[in-house]
Amino acid sequence: MFESLEMAPPDAILGLTEAFNKDTNPRKINLSVGVFQDSDGKTPILKTVKEAERRLLESEKAKGYLPISGSPELGTLTQQLVFGAGHEIIGSRRCVSLQTPGGTGALRVAGDLLKTTLPKSRVWVSKPTWPNHPKIFEAAGRQIETYPYIDAAGTGLDLDGMLAALSKCSPGDAVLLHAGCHNPTGIDPTPDQWRKIGDLLYEKKLLPLVDFAYQGFAEGLDEDARGLRELCRPGAELMVCSSFSKNFGLYCERVGILSIVAGSADLAQVVMSQAKVCVRVNYSNPPKHGGAIVSTILADAELRKQWEAEVTEMRDRINSMRKLFVESMKQRCDRDFSFIARQRGMFSFTGLSAVQVDELRTKFGVYVVAGGGRINVAGMTPGNMPVLCDALAAVL
Ligand code: LMR
Image (cartoon, rainbow, N blue to C red; front, side):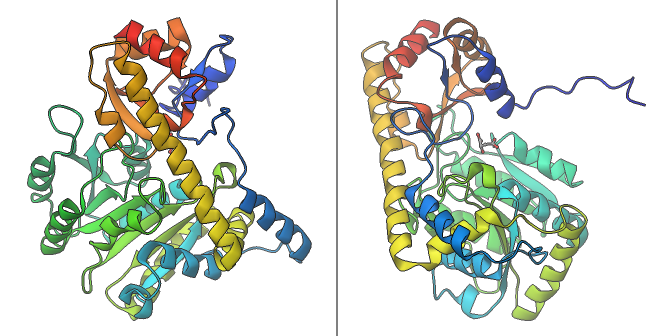
């Protein structure tokens, strides 16, 4: 049965870490996968996560299944984090949330739900976007379209191009937006640009499908949600896919939330019933542990305060690496990298060619993602910066 099968290509991002792990170069640097590292190059377990786990170990009484939609408490806490406590969307009960295996799980459930509820809807993604986005929605049987995102210089947003493309969408089409820390470019719309995007989507009756994988990594937990909140117009429907991989450092625990906002509380219940059908035939119900950690932290005032400080610390470290990178490159070559310090979140686009990306890996053991040379700034440290910048200057 399997004889005619050909080997699938390695994953554009996770495949690089597989190759990195096999590389014997002692000076190797992994700037491919979006995982936070501290200044020693380690991915830490947050102190608040350890404390929450200690409490869970003591208090947990059962290992039965969670409901199909996961922990209701986590759903409520996430809605407050995303929309802000007291938001009309929460008060009117027109938002329902499902706990999912990571943000990727949330995206896939959203894709399956679109297939069931809006079978003709296409999914519009930015060009470029996270390479897994189109694949997830294709796997859910969706037709993918793209809208322009970066300007000709490759360092800023092409808002006019984006709006022109989106104005051609049909009502009911879903538009995938990154709430902040755009992956792979690090380029986000300004508040004014978010308003214009929101106006267009509302006017054309398009469904915002927001990937919120990096809440807290751009400016702050609340600040990073402001763009998305511009899309919350009276009666407007939207979907938000939250991930807790990055801001809680819970990568391997696979914890995410799909929040779906419907036109009314009654409709929200109907949508929830359909989403549960999508989940039941996929993974049945979500894993518990990661979500229980997040709920424990968000529901406890003291732990939450400490966690917010930990998120700030991670964000500040990334931003300090952005500055150090720009200064270090200035000393080595004429190319202007100052845009890296203006971009946000874990990623930036270096604009390296495929040949340069290849040379970085084969000659210097520096791993960046092909197709524009996405770098994970959170993988830079004061220690690896000279090696990294020497290698980059050499390939440039
Ligand atoms: C990334 O873009 O590197 C992260 O979102 C991890 C992943 O699953 O690709």
